[in-house]
Every structure is written in C-alpha cells, then in structure tokens.
Image (cartoon, rainbow, N blue to C red):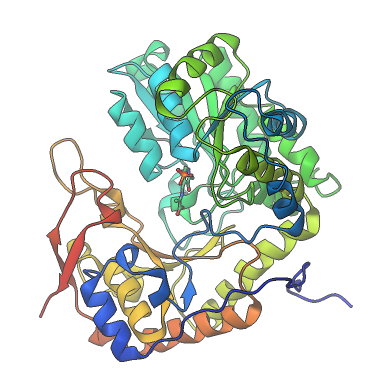
Length: 458
Ligand code: PLI
C-alpha cells in the first residue's frame, strides 16, 4: 500500500524524556529570555524546532563508530575514513576537518577573499556572510527574484540568476570575484533547492571568467532528493549519483556536518585545488587543530563518515522530506501563511502575512516565535529582520522575507509531534490580532539574533 507520507524508516532503541511545562512557567521563561527563543533553556522546551543543526539522532551504527575513535593527535584512522567518504561520495580530492561549518567558512574566506572583493551568493546565510565581510568582502545576492516572494511556487527557488552574475562581472570585473558561493539548499529562502541544470550553467559561466564555484554543501542530500523528484532525467538515478554529479560542478565546498552528515558536531572544507588546500592547512592549525583532526575528536570524525554513507539512503531522505511536508500541508490546509513550496529542512511561517498589523521594525517574526513558545512549548527561530542584521552604515537590513522557521531535526520527532505543532500554530493564527510588536532592548554588534533581547510594546 502506498501512503502519502512515508512512516519512519527506523525504530526507537533509546528514548530521551522531554520536559512538560505549564503556560504560566513558559510566560515567565520567555520573558526572562528577553523574547528570544535562543535564550531559553532546552529543559523549558517541549518540542524543539529551533534548528536542525546538531540535533540529529545518530544511528546505532554511528554510536558504535564512536567506540573506535582513534584519539591520536596526528594521523587518526578516523580522519582517513572521513577523507575516504568525502572522496567517494562528494568527489573532492582534499578535506580539512573543522569543528563545524563556520570553521570551514572562516578558513575559506581568509584564504580566498581579499579586501575589496565581491562574493556573490544565492541569498545570504548569517555566518557565511559574516566571515565574508570580516575578510573584507562584500556579499552580493544573485538568487532568482522568485526566492524573495514567499508565495511564488517554483521547483528550484534556490537557483542563481545568471544575468545577475554577468551584471556583477561587468560592473566590478572578474578579478574582484574570488568565487561564487552556491548553497544547496538555500536555508533562508525556505530550504529551497537548486537544479542540476543551474549548477552546470553557473559552473560554465564562472569557468569562462576564471572564477571558482564554492558550494555551501550543508543540506546537499535534501537538494539531491528534490532533483530526483523534480528534474527531468534524474528520476532513475540514485541519491549518491545525484550528489556526485552536483559536486562535479564545484571547486570546493564548506560543510556543516551538523545537518546532512547526521552528526551533533563537525564540519569540513573540501577542495580540489592543491594550492588552496596548502593554504587551508596553514590556517587550520591556527584556528582549529592539526589538518588531520581540525577541532574534532577521532570519534566525531568516525560518526560523520558513517553518517555521510547513511545520508544517501533513499528511504532516509524520502521520509525526512515527507515529514516536513506533512507539517506544511497541515498548516496550508488551515489557511496559515507559509513559504511555498515547502522546503527541505523546515516549514517557514510567513510572519509578515501572519502578523500583518505589526511593522517589520517591530520584529513580527521574533514575536511570533516567542508567542508560539508561550502557548505550546514549541520552540522555533526568527529568520527575518533580526537575523538579517545591519548594513555597514548601521541601518537595519529590511529583508523581504520575515519568517519563523519550524525546523525539523533529523530522525528525532514523529508525526504525532508534527500534529501537536500544527495545532499550536493554528490556534495562534486564530488569535493573531491580539499579538503586539516588540522593541529591542539589547543588541550585540554581530550575529545579533543569537543574544539580542526584547520587550513587548504596549
Ligand atoms: O552551524 P555551523 O557552523 O555548523 O554551519 C553554518 C551554516 C552554514 N551554512 C548554512 C546554509 C547553514 O544553515 C549553517 C548553519 N545553520 C544553522 C545553525 C541553522 O540553524 O540553520
């Protein structure tokens, strides 16, 4: 029998109880946390959809791999397993492990970007752009226009607009563009994928001008599933074959292993160019550790290598995408405004439409996330004006997308949990008119969303 949504392709071997709380306790908790869900204690949370980063449930196979961690300072056996997985599955020659994705972003930005350079990317990601800017670069958004409209249905809404790339080359010159940063999938657009055809064309255009293409590989497996589902010619290819072809259009990649490598910590920088690899090994020893562990224990590298092989299993990724879709479909049926189409790792509430009475500089998505927690114990994350930060002149960026992300950890929650989340959001939607805006009362200078604090407006 064929079900619309696939049941879990795993069974439960270990359980972790979750804390229950009363609405009064949650009202106090979110006030104490300055209306910032990042500042809640996890024990105050019932269903934790803050992020899919590092929140994965590892498999019995990965846990058993942890026991054969080779904790040598240099030349750990687990590094060679990781290197083998990266070569076999992604096709890159060199790998530099890092403690997580931003460790790889730091090294890549420092070795590739010079002050005054421009770094085009398919929508910004917070840490990625911060490292590019700290290296003296200017980020330029080259994603297709459709990605900035939450209601446009497009099968590959993460695609790069080649005309925007060409316009940037014409404006600043190819020698000011060290690389194009191509993210698969695009997190802040709603977990939207990039088509294989687009990757191929971006690589062709970049090569013509001597520009490199660096992938943000963080959710590459989710992207591969969408290609199999939506792009002509890929229906009969395996996820592994699709992933391999995707990376054939890249000169390198940064990876947050905490997402599609199915681990709680870890990441790497993968490269083909020997010269860049040499430079990366010179920096990794300063910021992370030896090039054969880069901020990770041997056991962490083993878990990541094993997770990479598990991640290309068709049934694993089919279930993951369908579980996210199940939640999104329920919300759509109830009329709740969400980003369409439903992406890979999360359902994104459109806070601009949900709380249309709150102006963007009164932080509607921030308040929506706080209120959802208060009524239900479900923790989500603001992905709007607070996450976007300020420009070099100190003004808020006003992103078109003002979103709340309900991010689904991998292999952690069931469909019953998704029902609870959907019911809570629908209840809140009915009460939306009574929700006020916020004012910011503490703001750190970079990556402000992590620790900023707010108070409700009267
Ligand atoms: O959290 P890191 O340092 O392992 O990875 C940084 C990072 C890079 N690229 C993309 C697309 C990400 O989504 C990403 C991290 N994302 C987080 C933490 C998230 O909650 O989405």
